[in-house]
Length: 153
Image (cartoon, rainbow, N blue to C red; front, side):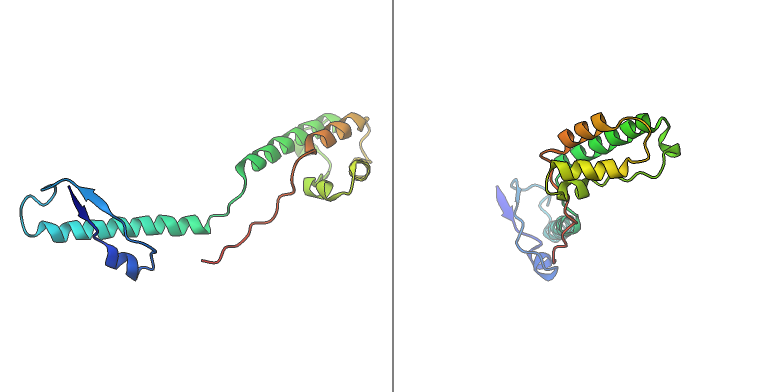
């Protein structure tokens, strides 16, 4: 087995951190010709460049906690469904009601959260106590979503 470290020059020129090592079986790929080594180096350099591009793309990706996002999405879908029942209409016909989960999470305590929800639902003609109680139970333990943080490259 031989070790090929082709592409280290390309990695250094492109600002990459380290050299990639590729393992090859003896006699594999070159077919015994003297021109095969240059071709292998070119292929290795291309592989290194592709790997560097993938790494750079990963740096600019905003990282959120997917589990927390999923919980938030499920909660928001539940809120829309419950508001539809409270107002007796479909989502498109619903009055402009905005329930900001992060705003509720900023509140000092449960009573303040309940007051904010009651103020938001003041024009609802159906009783809202059960909805408010259930919503406060569902947001318990949730974290406020922070804005995406920019990483310097």
